[in-house]
Length: 260
Length: 358
Ligand SMILES: Nc1ncnc2c1ncn2[C@@H]1O[C@H](COP(=O)(O)OP(=O)(O)OP(=O)(O)O)[C@@H](O)[C@H]1O
Ligand SMILES: [Mg+2]
Image 1 (spheres, rainbow over the protein chains, first blue to last red):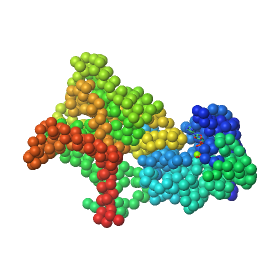
Image 2 (cartoon, rainbow over the protein chains, first blue to last red; image 1 turned 90 degrees about the horizontal axis):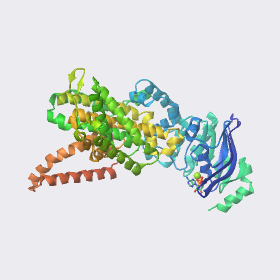
Image 3 (spheres, rainbow over the protein chains, first blue to last red; image 1 turned 90 degrees about the vertical axis):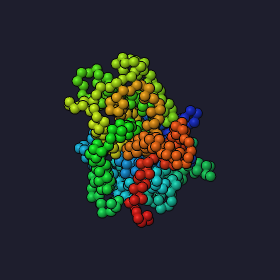
Image 4 (tube, rainbow over the protein chains, first blue to last red; image 1 turned 120 degrees about the vertical axis):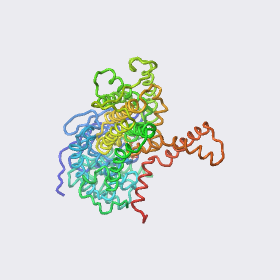
């Protein structure tokens, strides 16, 4: 792999987040380096999704500091993060169900499209040119994910596995520099998981996209990630290379203790 | 003519992005426009213009406006009639207060006024959704009608807010025949429908639908919820406002605030439910259906009563009308939420495969 892991681009410092009395995250610190695949693991309810939500501004932590590309912030803002090149997928698929695959992906590029609604209304001229230029880009993503055959299908009609793939497509359409993936392989069969792994590795490899990944399948996590952070009950209990984490007694205990 | 797309390969994305990618559809719509602009004016009588075609077009426009807001952007509104009222009264005021005001400019300004009012009453949508938003728009409905009755200034001091609009005149031509008014309304509606179609098939429309389908995800991909919702309120109210202006100037000639009641708002809502929520075509189908159904029942029910030898009084007829209405609304809400437009699409898909359905 030609891929070179770079500097720290995202540094989370002492993040605490609570909902009323529920402490979702307690004093968590970890960083993400450019071009790496960083996994977040932990038992159910550990606070993994909350962590992603803090990173792209859906949740606002009560304490802590976030340093993103040298900029210090108390919390993040969804729009600013999208503009800064962070894209994500959700644990419970959050596609635009009434729209076609193509429109979902085109929507993913909305920040790159500059025409106003009046230009859209007139269509001919700038709006049409812009639409075509971005359609070309979106078709590249469609090719990459091998979803040509469903581009005109409303996503609500697609099976679960394909919806997950389309959601990745919508995130990729934005040409993000950082991708946050919340359990991209949950509920998939082995074959679908293999495809998804391949896409994630290819994105990381070909475009250098930094990836923060939540995943329950330990095999997958150990295979594809560069570093792993482990959460349990909102606290960080492990952080490091997959092999170190695997042998960390606290992590083993957490997993054994909560195994169903 | 066989309805097929075979052999029509799209060699460019531009070709694929046309409003009607299938050639038969393009021919169909051109034929329809030709009939509407050339044949209908030649053959239709005054009754058709006044009682059917002009109101059909105006209500299609209002339904289109509501469809942008409710069907595309997912914001339920019960205030469409009030925004029509704003348009009607604004156009009237621009027309009678400003000497030499071109009527088309009045219509546009009326739309813009309605858009402004729409944005104002759209502000609650930033905090509340669904049913609660509908209640907030209900407030708009009553407040606006109340204002128009309460402040004589708005109706140029005419009694109880009734306004009688002047004749429509463009460049010295007076639109005094039903036929000429039909053509004027048709032109305006055709242009606005095209603009609406263009909006909904580009980034603007995708942002509306994204907010409708999943607002958190929309935010995360960088869509600004506030701007998107308020734009939907503005554009929607613009369309309703222009429809209101046409309603006063090209259909009734004289209107009063109470004519823009909640009943009318519901009628427009029913049009999009029956026609198809989130469909431009559906707005037209729904308007046609809701307007034509009573006329059809008026004719059909007495005939039916004769046939069966049952004495249907006129009260019975209107009761049956209401029941048929209610049943249809429920049918569409439960069985086919995408309305007639969806049925039409399914029909076309069947036709495409015909005669070999597999
Ligand atoms: N919006 C919210 N409101 C209230 N509580 C929340 C909210 N989001 C998360 N929580 C709580 O925060 C804790 C962590 O939840 P989170 O979804 O981050 O866990 P997770 O690690 O992603 O779990 P899973 O593996 O089940 O997805 C849970 O106790 C959850 O109930
Ligand atoms: Mg989760």
